[in-house]
Length: 173
Image (cartoon, rainbow, N blue to C red; front, side):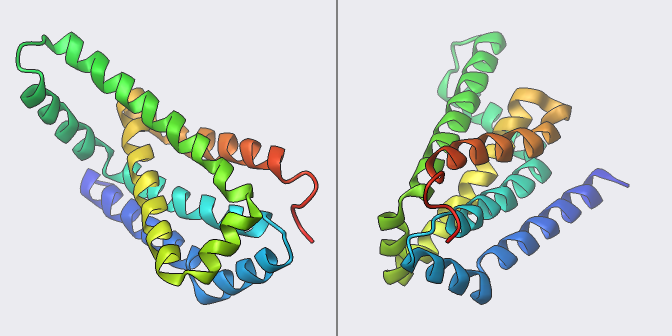
């Protein structure tokens, strides 16, 4: 399979996962759970949207990392390639930490109910989560190069561990 075909397949899977996660039945189930104070359905929905973006980010990883390297050459013209590479790795690591830390928001029942009652914000949140996943995929590609696919295992596991610490008493109802 060619690189272009793998990229197209990854993007298609990303869009299918995104469409499933923001579908009407899943949104309705999450809203009903939010009304009862159950946070796990909404948290899983949010992580599925991020995962969809992660698939897309990994599919576009080489292109996005190449663009980031070009941007760093423009922003740091006096720095050598080693220093620009270190800046890229630091930015990728910081992006992943911030992304994983934001998972805490999805175990806040009040936050979930607020989004349910403000539909435009819910749509924007879903798009931001997808873009966060896209950035995650690019970050994993920057950090692990050809082994960036390991981010498909590591990122969801880390996010779900973070979420599970907040759902002990109010996960499923």
